[in-house]
Length: 250
Image: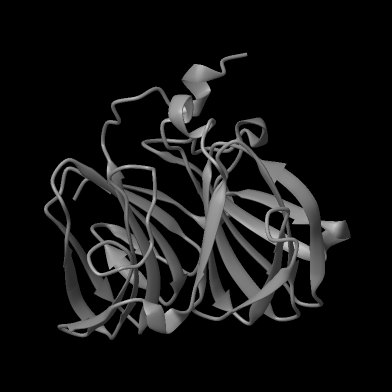
C-alpha cells in the first residue's frame, strides 16, 4: 500500500486564548512550517478541543470553503451575514463558502472537539461569489452498514452538502475489530485522520490522532485492533486550476 503516515508527534500544535483551546494540525498554515504542506485541494486541517470552553473571536475569510465537523460536545457559531449565533452539536456539520468575504466567530463549549478543514476551490472564480453557509444536523446525512463498518457520508452520494471545490468526498467511518476495506475512487488521494482506536495499515500501526495519506490504491485496507473511528477525505491527485500557494506566491 502506498501510504505516508504523520504521527501526532510530528503534527503542528496550536492554541487560542492562552491554551483554553488546543489544536492538533496535520496540515498547518504555510507559516506553521509543518512536515505536511497543503496538497490537492486540501489547504488546512485542524483538530481543536477545549476542556474549559473558550471563544475564537470574529475573524474574516475569503475564497476558501471551510468545513467544521463537531466530534464531541457542542459549539456555537456566529457570522456577519446572519448576525446571529447558531448551535452545532455532536455529529453536526457546517460548510462556509467564504466567497468575496465573510466574518465569523466560534465558541467551543467545555469538553467539545471539532475538525476544521479548509478546501481550495478555483479562487479566480470564488473570490467574486456571494458568501454562503449551511448547517446540517447529523441525521441529515446518509448512513450505511458495510461488513463491520458504519459509514456516514458527509460529502458524496446522498449528502445534502454542496461545495464549489471539485472532486471531494468525505466519510466518517466507525469500524469494529478485524480486517476492513473501503473502496477508493481512481486518481484520488485518501486522507485519513484516526479519531479513536488502533488501526494497522500496511506496515504502520496508527494510534489516536495519527494522520495518513494513501494514493494509487483501489482500496483502503486496514486491520482494526480495537473499534475505531476515522474521518476519510478523497480529493483529486491533480487539480486543473492553480492552488492558493501558486496564485499568491510571496
